Amino acid sequence: MLDFPVWKTTLIVLACTLGLLMALPNLFYDRVERANDAEAAVEAGLTPPAGDLDLWPSWAPSNLVNLGLDLRGGAHVLVEVQVQDVYAEQMESLWPEVLRALRDVRDSVGTVRRQEDGPADVLRVRIGNQGGMAAARQAVQVLSQPILTITGAGANTLDIGQEGDDILTVTLSSAERAAVDERTMAQSLEIVRRRVDEAGTREPTVQRQGADRILIQVPGLGSAEELLALLGQTAKLTFNHVNGIVEDANARPSPGNLLYPSVEEPGIFYEVERRPVVSGEQLDDAQPGFDQANRPAVIFRFNPQGGRLFGEHTARNIGRQFAIVLDDQVISAPVIQDHIPGGSGQITGNFSVEETNRLSILLRAGALPAEIIPLEQRTIGPELGQDSVEAGRLAAIVGFVAVLVFMALGYGLFGIFANIALLINVGLILGLLSLIGATLTLPGIAGIVLTIGMAVDANVLVFERIREELGRARGPARAIEQGYQRALSAIIDANLTTFIAALILYAMGSGPVRGFAVTLGLGIFTSVFTAFFVTRMMVALWLRARAPKTVTV
Image (cartoon, rainbow, N blue to C red; front, side, top):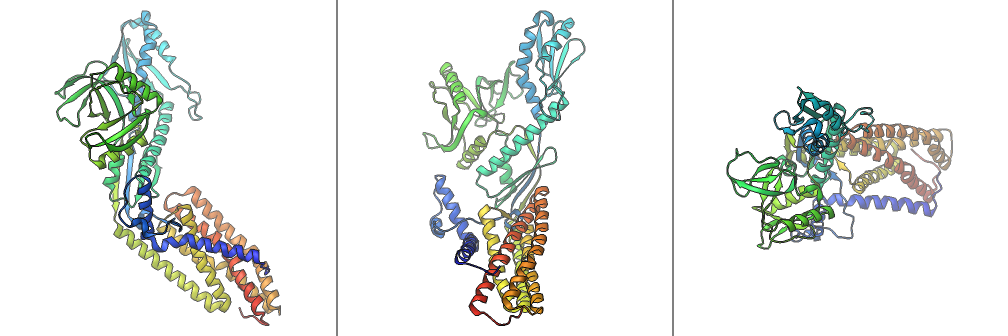
């Protein structure tokens, strides 16, 4: 147990040195953070503030422990996803298929006309021949597919019914609505996460709350309003053919058309075809830029399918307008001057540079499948975060000093060895947190403070065992070796059970609870390492150098 050859000593010293080097940037947090931001700006093609790149050497470690919302301040928003909006969109996309199916049995059902009144999530179709209702229902029933999910096994996607003798109704079945809700929430979570990540924020929290809510917490963001500006838009982009321009908001569009207001020209409304030429789902990329007149613009590129459709439309409609529609508003309506092959172009309008940047983020991340409604929003100021940091720092220092004093008074030289290992232990925890990019919150600080108290447990067990062996008149070397051997099982048992608790907290908890579990789990790992390798190595080297006749523990 006390045999430490050169290779083992070298590995232990190297591991400790690397861990402490990884923790070092946290002592210069502001400088390293500004240098990292400047480097990220250069990679994005932007010009960083003068001198920021030189604040930290490029060859040195630059990973930092991310500070959570409660330590740094930032934005907290709880939103509700309007999942029911998707039902209406499903019915809208289903209508052409229903029409095609009923036309195949026109001899039996007669004329077919969609009824626009009624709930948006119900497709109502009037047939001319009341005696053909059975044939109509049978024809549309073919469109209803089995649900493949486990919870929806045995159910179909559509419920086919009727109102009176001449109106056919089509709705989503309850099992399909549940499946649509799950898909909508999963897609909304992913798109919200991508939008926040695209904005360059550090370690945001994006998690589902209940059936239809999403919690977003972004440390370091200026305000909740800024976050809502990024999230609030559905960002549903379409390119529609223009069939007319009116100045009456109450005008009824022709069948198959929609009426959208113009953003650039208040009071002007564009009548556009309901079915878009190309949609935002077919965008490959969108970046902020400038047009030929040096005005802010969004440069976009379609995927191959979207590029082909866009090229075909522009070739057929030279001299006519098409509308760029974002969230049911026409942001631009240029005239097609020439065939536009290649599937790329630009969106110009009355934009600022910040607006083009935000619009680019929204388009790259994709459109939200449904509108989101803010239910709760809070801006946590950096002053509150700083108070929390100071309180946590004070608690850590008090606990740390108390443990150091206790160990030094209780175990003398061996206690000093344990204290040195404890200092290394805290450095290793910060180094590992920096390496994995973990977020430190107030519960995380509590985990570190708890680890400081637990870190000496292994050493206390060992030292007490050594005292027992010395009481049996063992020699110093034999007593120390027996102390480490006989304390090993108790140390493993104690730390293993605590580590299992940390795993359960991480698996079952969320947010700050997970932060506590991470710091606790890492602290257990580093505590065992420092007790059984670092402290034992120092004791072995001292024993080899001094060869004392007696030992006082």
